[in-house]
Amino acid sequence: MVKKGPEWIAIVNPNAGTRKVAHDWLQISETLSRWSVHHAAIFTEKRGDAIELVRQQVVLGVRHFIAVGGDGTLNEVINGIFGQDEVPATEITIALIPVGTGNDWRRTMGVPLGYDEAARAISKCFVRIQDIGRIDFVENGMIQVRYFANVAGIGYDALVASEVNHKKDKGAHGIFTYLSSLVRSLFNYKTSILDISVDDDVIRSEVFSLSIGIGRYNGGGMMQLPEAIPDDGLFDITLIRKIGKLAVLGQIKNLYDGTFVKHKAVTCLRGYQVTVKSAQPLMIEADGESIGQTPATFHLLPAALSVVVDPLLAGMKSV
Image (cartoon, helix red, strand yellow):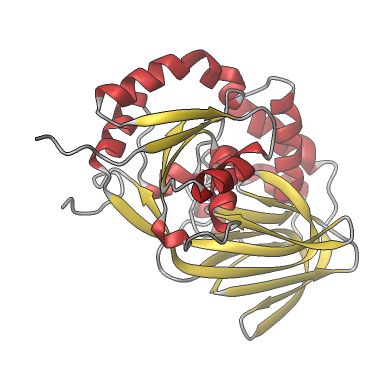
C-alpha cells in the first residue's frame, strides 16, 4: 500500500509576478500533482488575505501550507501561522512555489526557482528549521506586531520597498523595478538620527539605512547581509551611516556580492534584540512589505519555523 503524503493547502496569490500566478496556476497545480503533492488551493483577492486564510485553516486542522507567490505572499502566510493560538508554530510546515518579483528568501534557504524543481522538493519534504523575527512597531498610533522570515529595513530600505510596491501595483516587475526605485528613492531621501540598541550595546548615529535580517538577500538579489545564517539564533544587522549619494551609486554593483560592507560608512553587527528610536517616525519594511513606523523593537525567535528546502541548494546533507 502506498502511503499518502501530507495534505497541503496552497495559498495562491494570483496577482504575484504581475499576475503570472493567475496565468500559470493550472500548470503549477498539475506539476504538484505529478509529484504526488496532494493539495487544495485557496486564492487571495487582496493584500492581507493570506494572513486570515491561514489562521482559519489552522483552526480547521491544516498543518502544511504552500505559499504560491513572492516574498510578500510568504510573509503573509508566516504571519497567519504566528498570529494564531491554536497550535505552536513549530507544528506547522511551509513550502514555497516562488513566482514573485524578488524571490529573495528562497536564495538563502535553498528553495528551487522552477515549478518542477520546487514541486519535487515539496514531495520529498526535506525540512530546514529557521529563525523568525518579530517586530513590535507603531501604526496609526497603536502598537502592532509583524513577523518576518527574511529581512526588515528602516530608512532608505523602507523607502525603496514602498516605491517598488507602488510600481508593482501598477504592473511593473523585474530587476529594473528595484534598480529604478533605488535610484529614484536616493534623491528623495534624507538621513536621520537613530538611537539603536543591539542587546546591551547602544548606538546613536546619523543613519542612511538599517537592515535587520535572518536571510542574506533583499531587493531582488542584493546581498545586504552577506554573513547571515538563518538558523544561528541571531539577527545580522547592517548599519549604513550618512553617505554621499554618489558613493551610494558607486556601491550598487557591490550590493549584489556583499562587498559593499567594506565601505567605511558600513558597520555589521549581530544580536537577538534590536530597538530603534527616532525623533521623527521612519518607515519600516518587512520582507519587502511596508508595515508601519518607528519606534520599533525586533525580537529573534530561534528555531521557530519548519520550511521545505532542496537539501543540495541549502548546502545540507539529505536524509
